[in-house]
Length: 327
Ligand SMILES: Nc1ncnc2c1ncn2[C@@H]1O[C@H](COP(=O)(O)OP(=O)(O)OP(=O)(O)O)[C@@H](O)[C@H]1O
Ligand SMILES: [Mg+2]
Image (cartoon, rainbow, N blue to C red; front, side):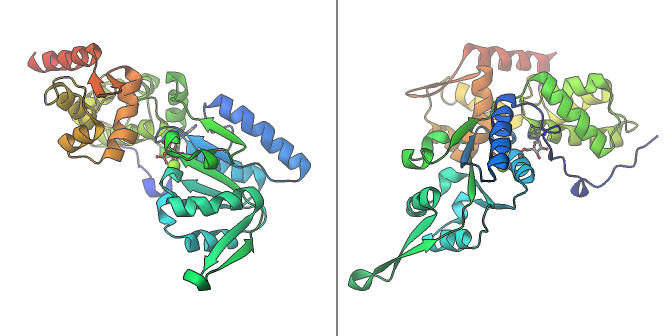
């Protein structure tokens, strides 16, 4: 019987408590101790920095910290802070104990970043008013806040900025079991009946990333509604993978295009990231943040000082696919 599927816009798959937040045990255990201690002291937490690939749960965890601390979470993105004035108005509007979540903090402009240093350390902002001989500096007190910075690229952060965080946490890829747990919860929230075998199949093609797992789940759910009886069975899942061209390693068209270009246009490499992105007609950030990390993790691409190289495994994987297509 076709299942009435609720509107996705109304359903938030984001975990909202420690229990719902699967995996990243090291990060979670560390944070829980700091949070409990801060609560006992009646103080705030030190600033923390999250780094790791896209979709691994940085924003979600920031939300849980705020909830645990009973604090208001304010969110902004690094590139949106164009001038020191933007930072000043953001910080002066905070209240004591608020948590400020800054996404993509490697993209905070340098001049704004420098003003942030004293805000993080002494909760003061030094502003320069006017220009030339008439310029005056003004010191502005700001409320005690906690910064949670998130970045996909730790290496782009200046050392003085990094040093102002009490802890730096790296987010790792998820295990098959963890992704299965996330998928089971998401399917339940979406009201999509799913076979445990189908959960295992989707998990193994999710590139060890919760966001991708949830995205594939929604696509397979839709496919099952239109092409099947609404239940996500192993058979429907297999057909959905073929239809969406998600291969056995979870690679999609864009990933395979990267490998193909590296193997043909660049004869296996080494290829500089700029040239590779240009040949793919993608922007560099997408290649670096979205496509490349999992290909590196799988050992299909290697990073060398001269550029990216396709490994023998890449030839094997792509060759096997070419053969599959011929039969
Ligand atoms: N540990 C987790 N447990 C359950 N679901 C998760 C977990 N981590 C992430 N998710 C799911 O994946 C989605 C993406 O996670 P999130 O937005 O927190 O990632 P992110 O690290 O902030 O990514 P980006 O770097 O692209 O901003 C969430 O909406 C949630 O549905
Ligand atoms: Mg995020």
